[in-house]
Image (cartoon, rainbow, N blue to C red; front, side, top):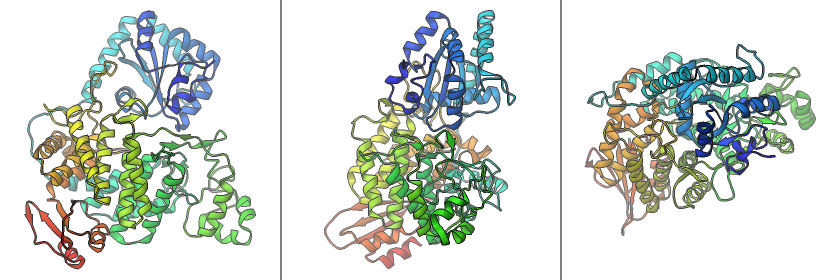
Length: 625
């Protein structure tokens, strides 16, 4: 018989709906039961394409003996971190603060007032890997809860007090904006750069596109270009169908953690477009196109919105959908197999495990198509069909960038459809009926500005302005500056946090700041600029001490300090003038369209000073140089 999760919309929660665990979704029903029966809450947070979440489910949550202990002594709650990033942020901060590390699945034990008192991640069913067995741990926590209840409450209070210090940012005094964090961040990134394989740090190696954004905008593209080339040639890129896997388990981008996330596709498309604009190298354009095409044919819903992810596992085996034996390749390609295998490092012994090969290399499009046709008959990994507004915003931005730089109208059409789909329900949501958070407003507003700069439909600019106004009303901290992650008013959220870390995704604060700066240039509304600058000054102490933590915020700082260009296109639209703008890498610019009678002209303004209008693409190119 299914548990309460059967009524939830999240694919992750649905995956656990038939566990013998008496799961509750996050909500008052569970909280009231915990208070009424004086039981601790066991909170499990994960997401549907998380490999170790699947492992813990198979080992523990599907185990009737473990479920019996959970059901008797605890109130068990499941949360999809992708639906509730505000809860994930709070309890992940607690986990990292108390254990020194974090990850998913996240396992946190709470008091009835939702304060954490014990934290961890994956626990095996029996004690191994230096971790306590999950069932034994449950029994021990129950015993301590009964024997030393006051001590647990005291510990929960102490952790929550510490959590408040970690999770919130307040103004330590007025400061001024300056560019000193920019070269410091560059030096920090250079210190961790892998000059052999690209990327930063060692294994496991993540793409972290926010680093690449900063390096491009700072005018030092070499490390970013090298990294993007190595990634595009490596096994983290799906050479048959396009798109990128989550991260590489080694330091040379060969063997991936095979899940595919929408936010990675979006950000990496933008990075490869930047690389193409800077270099003119078709390699970067090809990777961007193939990644866009993967999203369009595999992650696009019938309504036009974009799905969240594809799993790493199929048939219970990680990566099985993507890997090949030498014998398989030879059978499919015949006499063309030898050259293909040399190019893509396919060997009889395998370049991974069990004789399997992860393709990495370049070229051979006809042979790739043959292998893809065979792969299409395999059992595909699970697809998470949540449509998350923030991630759709990232993908809309990426498609607009690709439509502009690669002159691909179908990418613009897909971006327009997705934006329409996200607004279809009227009120902005995170996903389904889940309330939107800062990231949803900020990422989507930024996407709508990119849409406006692509098709010049003023309706997108109007919608972006409306989102920015609501963002300031619901999330902005007028006292100290900066934006809270959630809108407040939810008693079940024990802290309102201000996210500052630009990680796998840019922080909502970084993107919100850039949105306000762009809108200030486009609309001349000074309240946008003041809120953006106040947010930047709030984070300046952090930017000065550890700028590599916030590279996307540094892009906003650079935009604020860098005297952006305002390019105004008037009269009849001249396609050649538009192409002059779009084929160049211009991170500090906004583009406005002023329809009017007469011939096409372009006016470039910087720091409230405008040049004379020009009427040809050649003249505009000179101005932009």
